[in-house]
Length: 87
Image (cartoon, rainbow, N blue to C red; front, side, top):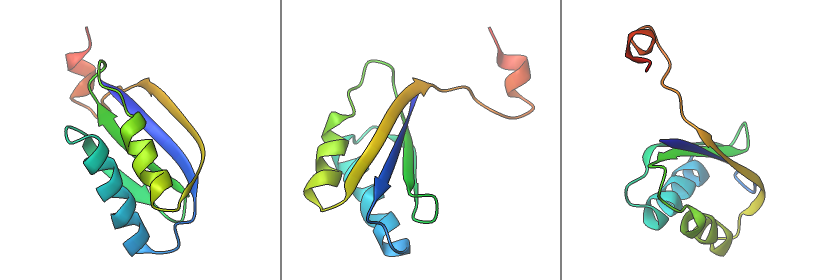
């Protein structure tokens, strides 16, 4: 799994957060743990390693939000049980 973190500009409220999440899901229907925060100015979601996320970025741009930066990094599960599941 990989985690995609997008820094963006233009979100002003909770409705904007919902709209960003919809753009991400529309571009990547298999996205998991999709969330956005207008206070932090970022959105994040999880994808399988072989999936592309550029469709989600395009959807966000089309809807008038400005993408400042983005990164894709390996996702590590957090929590007490993840300690026992490490390979």
